[in-house]
Amino acid sequence: MDRIVITGGAPLNGTIPIFGAKNSALKLQAAALLSADPVMLENMPDLADTRFMAQLLNTLGVEITWIKETHTLRMHAAEIVSTIAPYDQVRKMRASFNVLGPLLARAGHATVSLPGGCAIGARPVDLHLKAFEAMGADIVIEQGYVKAAALRGLKGAEIDFPFVSVGATEHAMLAAVLAHGDTVLKNTAREPEIIDLADCLNAMGAKVEGAGTSEIRIKGVAKLSGVKHPVVADRIEAGTYAMAAAAAGGNVLLSGARFEHLGAMLKFLRDAGVRVEAEGRGIRVQRKLTDRMNAVDFETEPFPGFPTDLQAQAMALMCMADGVSRIKETIFENRFMHAPELARLGAKIEVHGNEAVVTGVPKLVGAPVMATDLRASVSLVVAGLAAEGETTVNRVYHLDRGFEKLEAKLQACGAQIVREREDQAA
Ligand code: UD1
Image (cartoon, rainbow, N blue to C red; front, side):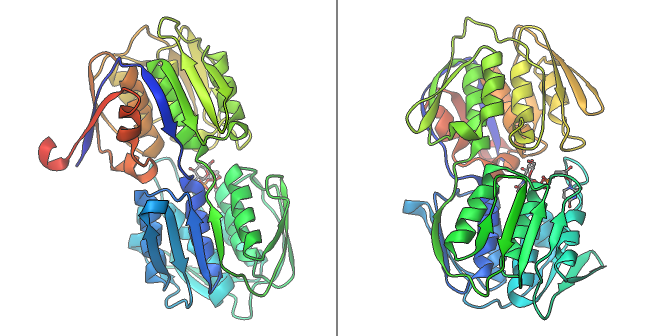
């Protein structure tokens, strides 16, 4: 398995381009199943997860063309040849479950493996299934598979989610656009990726209103057309590099990052004493190495609150801050697996249930560490950039799921970071 070796202490100076959002791209890819015409996604991130989704779509009958030079993915679902998403494919990447709604809406039936547990907690899909049932689908769960059918088509419905779920909001949208009649979704998630999905669906001829608020209204249409749509900038990638610049010190422009999508995180950085400002089409992040960061308390929340996907990276910063910071994770259970790994670098962290208390230390010292999930592993890179000496991050395949050209982007700003391939690392 590849590993990443970082020699900490080099400040970051330069420009980091922010690519399209993985979490948006995956749902936009699923939307390609809704039309018999080609769907072209521009600013497409080339990641293990988006490649994987493309492979799954291909097995369902979608013709796939990656146009590398222009970061475009062309998907053409002229005909759906299979409505089965097998265990091996859904198990590897949870977002593959999102093909269920579009298949149900377009083909009238689908058999999709349940995603199962995952490293950051149980993550059930009950809200997704309740939404499809409300739209008239018959659903049975057999041998680990969801078998869903709406042979005469889905019907519009009023669905009031008991709590906010990004995935269930998006999945219900992906099905309701082709349902007969009107759907009202209440208590919806408000993430920028949901607005991106609505924009793409509307450009395909759907009638979606209210994305970005807690009520989304959809008028079903009989058919959707093709589209060319740019994937929204990845706020989690941008936030991660902002944390990296804060950890290592220096002056970095995150080009393409959307200031308005990162409010809670930018406030956190400002409170910590990091300079952040909008600059042109990007965000500039600056920190003088001589100034120690302040400890800041925060808790994760649905958008526009502090994103759970940046919690690990922010914890890495707080390990070096002046004082004690209290961190509460309210979205996922068991999302502090990076804490013992950060402790290997000398961090002082106590975890009690969904709260972590971090007592900042003046410096971290490099060590071998193990990546446990996507965001946890990048927090170890953030910490490693600031730690004295060498940090080796093992199991980096997690990073490849969500960060394109991570080492190259950091190297270009002066970081000492290299990937050792499996054969070299053995
Ligand atoms: C998405 C993101 C993930 C991010 C998360 C929260 C993608 C591919 N992933 O995940 O990176 O961390 O939003 O911003 O976009 N839940 C249920 N039943 C359901 C659905 C969810 O109990 O049917 C629970 C989950 O277990 C979790 C909470 O609701 O505790 C929120 O999860 P959700 O917003 O659905 O996250 P995902 O869409 O899985």
